[in-house]
Length: 352
Image (cartoon, rainbow, N blue to C red):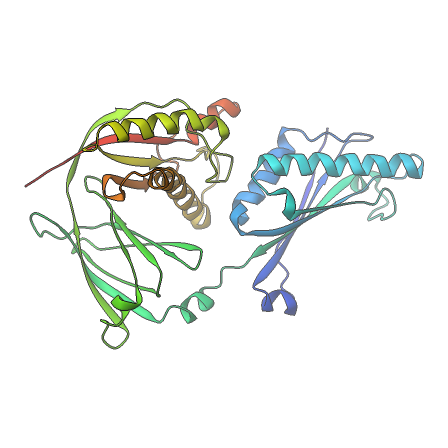
């Protein structure tokens, strides 16, 4: 099967600007009389979903087409099967079924005298446009302060995860521990650094009332810890490009819950990982996506434990991006699943 791709990058219309969305259009081409996608086609579609971010998708329209070599009814059925093939692959990539619309047009719309270019499925992907101006408009509060070691008061460089209005942003404190960010009421700030428990704070209205000239000052004290032992799990896995846990994860999650329930003194660190082969080109968008997804995977396990009665004070979590893949070049889905994982480590607080 020969597959070609035409990627039309976003064209912004007035109505799209108003709704803060963009369109991304691509065409996947099929061999004569075929409705099968091969590995190359899967890779092409997946790459586009990664670049956009599955979580940003608002709707995908699929339009199936055929050439004019057969009867109208044959071509209409063939275009329908081609559309269904793409639809089924999108489901494996964690695109919700309710976001996908399908239309089969047979040979009714010809785009070229070259028949091979008419054997296609067109994907129109509508997605949210992250507009930094909009973000800033809604975040008038300046939050500044210093991150320090709880015991020694020494400054700490740390990662800061800002969760606000369904957005996840990343910042950091410098080697002097100082940071300055913007956010608003209801945002969750999580500070993490290797060798320390997470320190989290919710920006409440009562905190905001303590701000001076729209600036809130915070001192963040982080508790040092020692990683003592890895708790081995085989199947805490996620769907591709998603922080949704696969059903087969249930047994290991229950086992982790039992371990924590039996030992009320046990502290753990949850590390989220993702699959992104080293051969894949990394730009700043992909790097941010990797960090964010791995963080969300760790947080998914954290939220599961909280929901089932484990105190948040016993849990720390962080995203490891794709820096510690078990299989840097996965050859199959099983190896990819091993990369899309969460690891759990026992911790010991260092008292002084």
